[in-house]
Structure formats: structure tokens, C-alpha cells
Length: 327
Image (cartoon, rainbow, N blue to C red; front, side, top):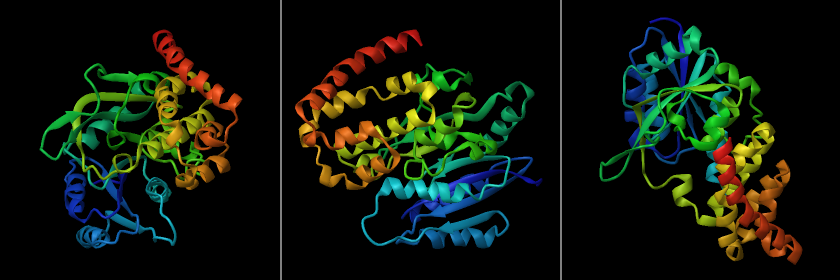
């Protein structure tokens, strides 16, 4: 096996029963180059870290493990997951890297080879990442593709991706050159989901393959599924504010992607409880996220400010619909 060219960054938290499937799907990859695993455990209270260490005993030269201690006080799952990813991202020393959630797995043993071949091609040097479709696997064993059939094989610009597409993060092999361009302090608590993809691909294209080469297991205990509606919407408003800071040149595309937030937040405005959103309010204040702050503190706004949010909630959807047709 040649020199390591790909790092697979696997994040775990209390996923002891999923470790073997994830690790096996990586170590069974057929490649002409070396692949290393950088595992990050978010201070699991079960046997997750020990399960990873058993694999390390078998493959001592291929696996690294970094464990984050659980601090005292309230732990915000999304913030912790983000910092776990960033913690292991700092250890990447290969040409390419890809993330994998600990309860997911690769389903094609040639996927990494195929993705590297695509990114190595002289025709694809304008691509910063290569992704593919992913199967969402439900508890009743039914499957559904994460990306719809409208997206065909080929290159996708950052603007086109952000306004109308979704490719699951577990599928995206990135060039490691993108890491130096990431504002990890700004992203420290939000390096999740599409906020992993967007800061990287804003500077390049994605090469997309419609075949499904990974499985996204629907456990119903993820950050989104376990959160209440107000928390989920405020988290996504933070993502919107972040996207504007990261790529102001794509502000219109970000408005389209997150247009639903204003109408959904307006619908639940009277039930938004700032006391239950203290961590998110602190994050918004520290990072200067004005839209997020206004929604968290809706009850404290004066009549004029509330009217302004109502006007924006009504107008954003219409404006986004027009933008989608012309951009």
C-alpha cells in the first residue's frame, strides 16, 4: 500500500454498537494508496472509545483516536459535535479528507478510489470536492436517497449547490487545501451538516456522482430529531447568519436556502422562550448574528421591531421564489 492520501474523520458519541460497521466499511476500501482513520470521541459514557481502541490494536499504523472530555455544566449537543469535528480536522496531514458520522458507513468498497481518481483528473482541478448520493436507512429497513434524481453527474458550482441542492456530508471527499481557508473560530460551534460543506465549496465546485456509495442511518436521536422546533429553527438561523458572514457574495443564495425560517419562526414567535436558548443567544452575541438575536428576543422587541419581522417574514418567501427562477 502506498503513502496515505486520504484521511477518514469519524466522529462518535455513545455509539458503541455502530463502531464495528463504520470501521469495517473504511478498512475494507480497495485503494492504490494508503487510507488513515482519525477518530474523535466526544467523551462517550458507554464503550465507544474502547471499541475504537480494539480496532487500533489490529491496525496500529492506520488509526488515531482523540477523546474530548465532558466538561461540567450544560452540554449543547450541536456545539459539542462541531468541536469534535474541528478537533480531529486539525490532525489531517493527507491530500484528501472525508467525514463520517459514527453511526453511518460506506457501502461501496471502491468509493474512495473512484473519488480520488476524479479529483486527480486534470479536467477536475476546479473541483474542491467529490460527492455522491447516500441512502437514508430507516428502522424498518426501507431506504430513500438523500439527493433527488434531478441532480445528474457532473460539476456543480457553489452558487448552484447552495440555492437548490443537498449532498450528504458523509459522501464528500474534500481537498485538504480547503482547511487553511476555514475560519475555525467562527465555525467552532456550527461545523455541522451543510456548514461543513459550504465554507469549503464556496471556493470551488463539487463533482457529483448519482450512485449511492454510503448509508446514512436514521436513528431518530440526532441533533435535529431530538431538538424542539424553536431550538432547531434558531440553530438554522445561526447557520443563515454564519453563511452571510462566510460568503457575502452568495447572500441571495443563502436567503433562498433559508427562506422558510422567517415564516416558520413567525408562526411560533409567541412560544419562543429566550431562557431556553441562552447558549444560542450567547453564541449569537459573540459572533454578531443579528437575525438570530432578534428572533430569540422577540418578546422584548417593541411594536415597530415586531412589525419589521412580520414584513420580512411575508416578503422573504416571495423574494426567494423570484430569485430561484432568475439565479
